[in-house]
Length: 131
Image 1: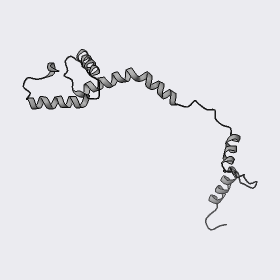
Image 2: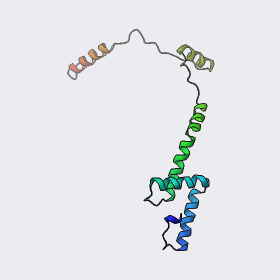
Image 3: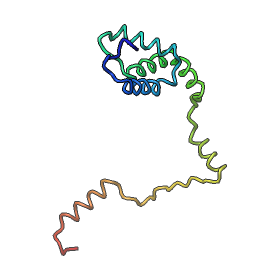
Image 4: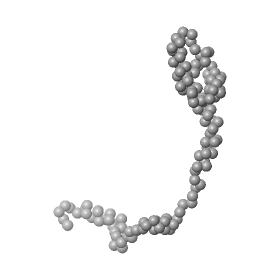
């Protein structure tokens, strides 16, 4: 890190900056941190890194390295697709559980949509006060 420091920083500021770096990177192994610094130097030699830059590189590298294992673990926990059950089987399951499906059958004297529209038009055509 010495290549990134300014000479005019006080020891207190330098210690605070190092403490911040340590807090941010403490969960990562040293060899991973060193690899991230090398990658940053190769990719962005003109930019001084901050802990966020290095964390971003570490997270990306971890994801690329572990993505196949994570995908395999997720696939193992997913259930196999099931065939949809028939209406008869669904009714049987509901009956077994004590739920009966009650259907309302239409009555024979029910008006059709055309009849209802005609009646509405007739009512709208009659003047107010007439039956």
